[in-house]
Length: 297
Image (spheres, one colour):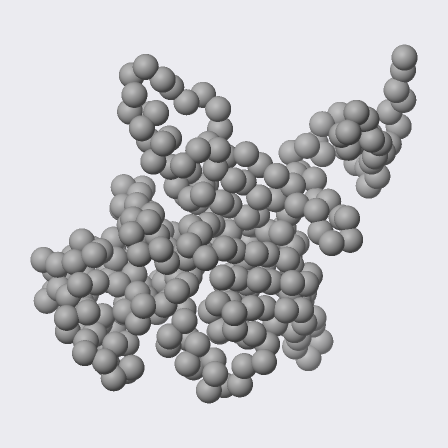
């Protein structure tokens, strides 16, 4: 579904140049439910904007649903944003038109494609659990309900890809869990690919794959040990308890063989304040040693 190869994004002003992405590589399979995490300024929102056709890379390759976004002209981007991708923002003001009802908000993007809209809008609001609120205006809906309307809007034109930028950032924990459960249900029932940018560590427990971005590159991946449904079943079981972490963490090696070691590992004695490590092969394993470590025996 998504293939990023050596993706670079540079923002320039009169006297300033900011490199937001520095040769980022990423592949996302169709039907995945994944999250992208990273500190502020790491490049995760820049990546999401490019996947959504809202910004263009400075260099590299970017394919979404077999479409080469770097070759797109403005009319191609308009068609792409209308048909191929749905976007959910943290700020509901970017998702919704306040003087319309929930139903009218969902009908609008369908109307723009010239399709029968009311029946589809009904179905979507039912799917996100708001069938009983479809005639309410936004001022009559809670923050969580407004975000559910936003998700219905993003799905209105049946895009193969759904992008969500901090979709739970302004919600309380209970409502956030409901929204994340909705994403899982949509992913499972209709097979849509969902990519969520977030700073919420709890979200990692509900997605199958987490990609961490650091300094404009992918630095680590966390992949679920067992399916979320299996994990919930184990948690509900009185006989068996989960003691291990839900995900396995992997460091990412780029095409040049460069490896970003998780910061926590470099804080241990011997690696502190050093820009070098020794690399040796032992029994089929690659071992990293502090630069001044001396093996004995």
